Picture 1 (cartoon, rainbow, N blue to C red):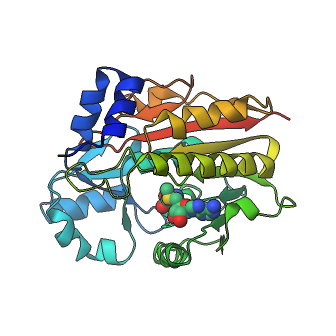
Picture 2: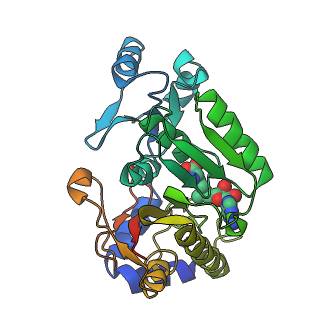
Length: 299
Ligand code: SAM
């Protein structure tokens, strides 16, 4: 296991003695998890099918549609099952299921997903509203936009318009009821320390990511209707990509933090965060490191 020096330094600076726990969590192999696509099935069905096949699973308290498969070798078997081939289930990490739950999409709302591919959260938002909201899903990368389209079709998602554009260039004549900005990031909460990551995971990546994150978040605030809410998330645990970005937009006084109800997420391992009301997930064998915060546009 090689932990890049810059990363170790930032973790110790930001989390003190918890740095070791984080490094330990990042070096653990993740369990497999999936989300039941309620546009095509329900958790009772999936429980029965897994039971019949004698595939062991666990549930979580905060999302009835999340299933954890402790034996990751079962992935091949599940991929060969109808429930996977039909899009009744979707492989998704547990942490990645949190931002749409915090966004709380409702029927008829006009929702912007600003960094959408491969579509885990776009499809989750559509399922949560039973295809009754309107989603604009933006993705800058053409190949990833294709993957987004594939997943949307496979999952039976409707009322979703894909835009293969850089969200920073979206026309400001658009306005949305809710926005999810699941921002591109360094991936510091999901990196696999057993691999040689030093080639791409470096301080420069963190700096480049934070520049784009701030530009995207400023754009999101412009595109959001006044009085309405957006969710900003990253799979990074570094302050440079999370709290620092949020503090910069809070300085302008046109947004406020809407505290996330942490009671709903009691069983999730957490790290201290410098933004009251935000949620910072500590990586372990079940969870990826993830930051989630909800903002309301006040003026
Ligand atoms: N929300 C996605 C999901 O749940 O499946 C994951 C999004 S991933 C963290 C970030 C995505 O943003 C990448 O697919 C990346 O290509 C895209 N991206 C990066 N910069 C962008 C930009 N300026 N405009 C639109 N998409 C962008």
